[in-house]
Length: 469
Ligand code: GLA
Image (cartoon, rainbow, N blue to C red):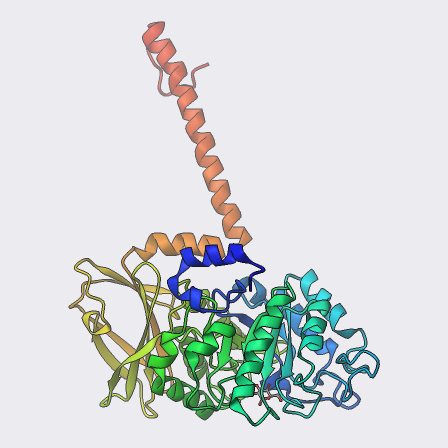
């Protein structure tokens, strides 16, 4: 950790909580990207299913889509390999892990270069046990070799699982800490994403946050609404503990986004996106980017919603209101500049529910006004004082996501739009407008200078209808 003293200095000025987080300077906001597991699992049958098997081609194709479809521009920059990438045996001479020769013929180093050439990062998976969850060689007993191998290959992130781990929790705790130290000792910036606390009820999250950039808090997400709801509920039940350790450099990981897969409706997909953003979870999609629908893409690329997730405060939101009569919940997340993000989420299974709220109920008590913006509708609803009532209507399983700011969003969102919208045509038009405006101003000034010379200094009366020569 002493390798980057400048980062320690920098981090102190950002946020006090960062001091307690892993100080590798990474994950200052929740990591974003793509992860193979939920969608592609351990499909190693490239003979019969070449398009969907876990192979370098799959990761390259996803990388190409991240770049060409605007995901990289929106912040999704990690491409993460999960289980089942390696041969069943280590190299007998070096003791190193070997990528599956048939499915990764060019090796991981070449795949990492492929990502880096496109502005992406490559993540890899291992397990602090004798074997991975799918029975490939584990890292236990090979810690130094494996971590150095990942660094040599140019890997940018490690997901460390814990199937087949040693029985003693003390050994597991020391093991996860040791890997953190080894990662830092390589001198390569490798994001450390831990499964250390997953499925353990009494984890010491303060300790985990000191060693990991992110950590999985709940069991594996599945492509189902029930699974999304179970993850939200588990997080709500532990929200005080989880929110106390959420900070730049250390985030609770709710597992992958399943938006764009088979089971979530558009409303449910908005809910997963909104909640993962409110809860400051990593945004790691596990879907097939080669064929996702336009509506799913729009949800995943919603920059105003992503901005809530990427807020530099790094705070995790909490459930603050539960309305039994409408079966709705209100969640809120503090943002920089005394702003706040709010998600009104409906668990109703009948009809859209209308919820009435005052800002005061959301803990917003400034004596001035708040500007309220709807982040899925991309509309500013207006200016509200703390006792004014805001009414929103939420579809079953759906969400309305708002942002309350003290500064007028008209200016904020115009500049935001120009800055991040990645619309060269609009930017060019604005530039052209500014140039024409300046030229026109110069022309007028010259014209009036000439008039002044003629009328005042030479005494010639002005002829407004004619061009003066
Ligand atoms: C565990 C993890 C999953 C995935 C699989 C791979 O179940 O929790 O996220 O990595 O192992 O085998």
